[in-house]
Image 1: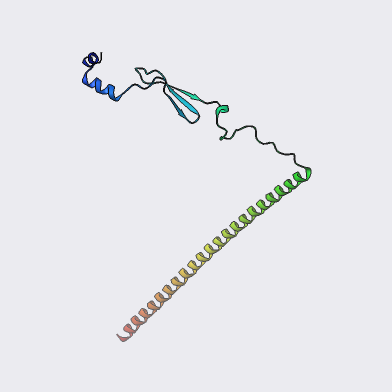
Image 2: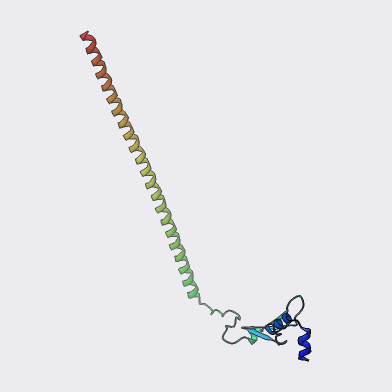
Length: 155
């Protein structure tokens, strides 16, 4: 029978069948909390069945998420103490915000004062420079006119 099969199959088909053996039809792969079963192969591809384990089947290592722990009843004094602590935190936070705003305003004033001072210094220096040039120009003009008068007197 083997010899007859060998005659029917081409060499390429024989090689492919050696490398691509058919897996066991009930192959099961397990990944953590799920199982993957390979179903019948089809011409269009393969199909798988994924089975998730129920939460009761999970190992006890994983924490069980049930209802949150119940809070103990608080006494009136404990509630009052918590309210006072919350009020103190609010006051502290408000004071901190006001302090930051005051610091910001002070910084803005300093920046504005510095800008005005620099502007005034620039204006003063520009005026002094202009006055110096005008004085120098006036002196040069007077010297030139005096030289011209002297020349006319000599003639």
